[in-house]
Amino acid sequence: MTDRNRAVLSGLAGIRSDLEDLYRDLHRHPELGLREHRTAKKASEALRDLGYEVTDGIGGTGVTGVLVNGDGPTVMARADMDALPVRERTGLPYASTVTLTGPDGTEQPVMHACGHDVHVTALLGCAQLMTQAKDAWRGTFVALFQPSEENGDGARAMIDDGLTTRAPRPDVVLAQHVLPYPAGYVGTRPGSFLSAADSLRITVHGRGAHGSMPQAAVDPVVMAAMIVVRLQTIVSRELAATTPAVVTVGSIHAGAGPNVIPDSAVIELNVRTYDHDTRSQVLKAIERIVRTESEASGSPKAPEIERTAAFPPTVNDEEATRRVAEAFAAHFGEDAHTIDLQTASEDMSEIPEAFGAPFTYWGIGGIDAELYAEAAMKGTVAQDVPVNHSPAFAPVVQPTLDTGVSAMTVAALAWLGS
Image 1 (spheres, helix red, strand yellow):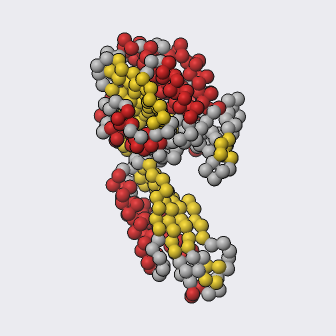
Image 2 (image 1 turned 120 degrees about the horizontal axis):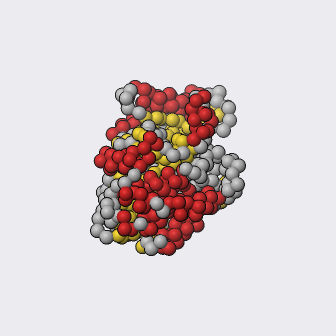
């Protein structure tokens, strides 16, 4: 550990208990995307108390805190705040029992099933350490709390609300995510890290008729079936074997009874790719297949292809990642790793792209190390280790929080020299 890191991180012991209480409080009170009012208020109040210049309400509930500490680089550290419509089944004493009204007017259970409560706590801990040890670093530290990552629209909401003029331009943007790895683990990866995700709703049109008179119909069910089969060939026949991608059809809806050929069918699918070229190639192939199969079936109307959600690929800057990886190796030792490609998706990269700044995004572990080791020994990690978005996902409090605070702080100090 460098002297500078030691000087800043020496304050962690003194705030550990408060951070643990904050984490449990956030976990108990989750909020859905663009409705993170309580969480945002806690973040902004904590930053103001620490002496940060705070701007809140960016994009609805986004918050930035700026701490200027002399001349030097500007580092922006980002945490997402929103939870998921999941009913918690962790059995923890601080488990969420929150329900909120959903867009359709029904009550939805809400849970921090993805670990964003860890992210908020870790960034606030880092923000506190940075202000307690200002003699150890120089530059500007920006803490950014982003809403609605799960919906893929929170970063864009902040940008559209003037983020790039309401916060200083960073020299680098940093972010992290707690993942189903052993607590204490930190993992970096240069280049492609998280996949792009595109969700599509495709409506194909036919001509309805009596089930006994198929000659009078253009059957959209058959049309949809042929499209689904053909979509499976995109990855297997149009991409190189070394190019990772996933095309999943998750939903097909057509008709209301066994003896009626319907007028239309709806296909919903999800696409995962790791770079812009592959993403474009796969999406164009989907459109080509849908339109061609519709035409081949004699469809009386062109199909409708709607993109219902879109997350960009997370492609880490090589040099920024190298610098963070070296800092992690020096601080965490054998707990610092190179992490595998992840099929999860994020909208975080839109923020550094809006500023024209490089970024790096890494993973930290949140699973009890003994549980993980036992599952690994039995070869049952996939079955026995709860993953993000599971109702059983709840990172162990420690050493997860210490790792998250330390990782964000060490990474920021890799730029903010003395």
